[in-house]
Each structure stands twice: as structure tokens, then as C-alpha cells.
Amino acid sequence: MRCDNKTFYAIGIADPGTGSSGGFFFTLKELHEVVEKSLIIKVPVWLEHGSGSPEIIGKVRYAWVDKKKGLMVMMEFDYTTLMSNVVLEWIRSGLFAGISLGYKSDVEYTGGIMNVVQKTINEISIVRDPFHKSCRIHFVGTKIPDNTTTGIVKKTADVSASEIFPYF
Figure 1: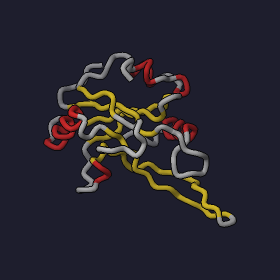
Figure 2: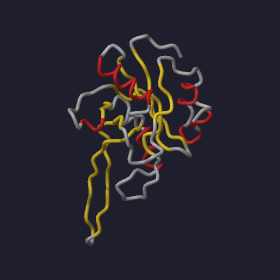
Figure 3: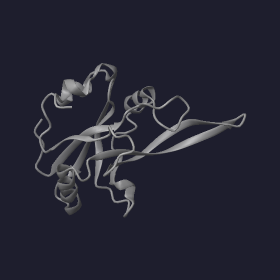
């Protein structure tokens, strides 16, 4: 897929889906629901959860669930801004090559036991040190490989990141 020269893309693992039901971390089932309901599309991308300032540096363009790796995201950045150019170089150099989900959790207490009843993703961040070590950017560029969109439109349960990107 050829993209315009004002945009670059980063693709990687945003969450491994290794959480348990009712816990603070996402399960694969919850991640499937996020993707199926398009709850992550157009979510803003920040740098380090906006620790310096919550400046939007990009947005989520596509997402899918890999049955072995978890939530995969394709983030889109405007190449014409200074901050995006800096972030691109940081990703390429490996300085900021991690991905982290920013979300809020709604909890209920039943019989003194805390249970997370809903998680709402409000941002994705490019980070230096992701909480989940597997959550890394594995592709960055202005031209998305042609087989990417073919894999994304498949049913999410049947998609493997290695089918789309052999270097994952």
C-alpha cells in the first residue's frame, strides 16, 4: 500500500492479552471486543503517556488481535511536524520503541473483593520502557507492506502477525 509522503506508520504489539478475567490487565477476549467494536481506532498516540505534556503525536489507524502476540496496532503520524520527525528518529534508533496502553479501569467491590468491570482505552503511548516487554514497535515506514491490509480484514481470531509481517 503506497502512502502519501506526509505520513509515516509504526506497527507493533500494544498489549499481550495475558490478563485474567476481572483483573486490571486485558485478556485476549477483551482485546477481541476492543477490536470488533472499533474502540481503539482513532485513539490518540502520545509520548510517554503525556508526562511532559499530553501532546497528540499520532493516532491509531488499524488494529487486530494476533492469537499468539496479542493486540496489534498500526499507528499513523503526520511526518510534517517537528515532534513526529523526532519521534520517528527515536523509534528508528530504538530509544523509544515500546508501546503502552493508557486506559482507565472501573471497579466494583463485592464481599470485599475488587473486580474490574470495564476498561476504557483513552490513549496509546510510545515509550522507552514498556510494562509488558513484548509490547514493541516492529515496523516503521512510509510504505505499508502490501499484504498488511489483507491480514487485517481477516477474522481477528485467524490472523497471525507473522503471516502479515514475516519479520515479527
